[in-house]
Image 1 (tube, rainbow, N blue to C red):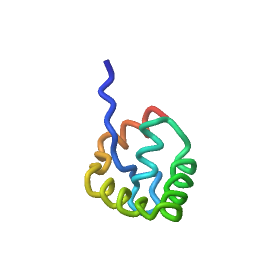
Image 2: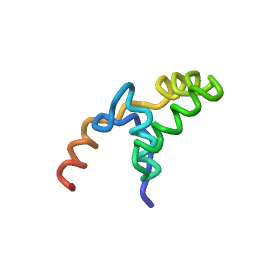
Image 3: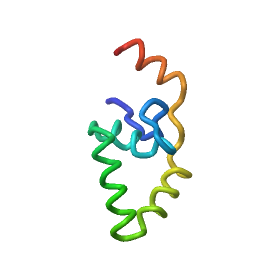
Length: 73
């Protein structure tokens, strides 16, 4: 069984790597996640709080996993 964990992305990063990491975890284009986040920011205002909590709680992608991903790609 593959131990799939969510991390903030180092390569798909605009602000904190949260949307890029969620996109990689769900195997979805990070742009879609960013659009959803922007809609939540403006529609409900709670999107900012959710993003900040995710930024704090989701760990940054380990560098050894990035090196492995580059070799495989």
